[in-house]
Length: 286
Image (cartoon, one colour):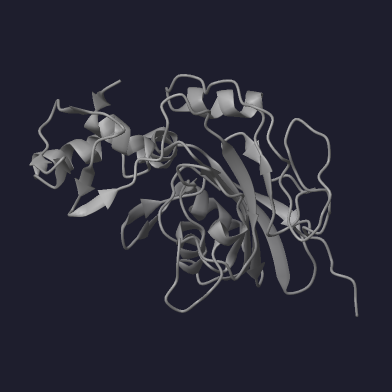
């Protein structure tokens, strides 16, 4: 069945429908050798080129989409490949028979914690779009004492090089000595925004962990470098939060695991090893 070209490419994670419509108007997309026009439809058997490169249409219209919650360790990057040979989050994901995993946003190499990945490119682009205003929560370890006036200013808003920014909430999460933990929330996904907000007040972030994306929380039973698969209720929430039709009923799939961990029985398919440190927890002396 033929579908609009921008819908097909959105499902492949090539961009949002609006972005793809702009690319069509710029003449950057071809169908079977012909320059595509707005309103053109295509079949999944057609040859589609974007900026001269062919797009492999592995997506099947009736395929059931999946979403993973990955517990990213520090030291991994969110790109598909790296000229420097650094490990990427895609190295640890389950293999797909068709399509590909699309990351919902990015975490920098020194940030750990929750990152969502999906086979539904349109869902990913909707979740990442600024208009979605989905709240993110982070655990932040700060070096030095923070005055209450600084916390008030961070909630009120400060001017960064790319415009004003603020935390929705800043909550004391404990800690001892020179390092102190805070839990912060914000509804944007600008590059290094959490770090830059603290740095604007002269503080250094020594550790940063994403705990939550919308209502999807980091499952502490899933160890770093491993993933869990979202259940039906969580999928429904994600789709409804960005105004998309609910995902098709998910099929039972192998539980996620890595490095020999045995998965647990749960609404999520997940790992069982509990080695994610709690924010503010003291590490044992060695």
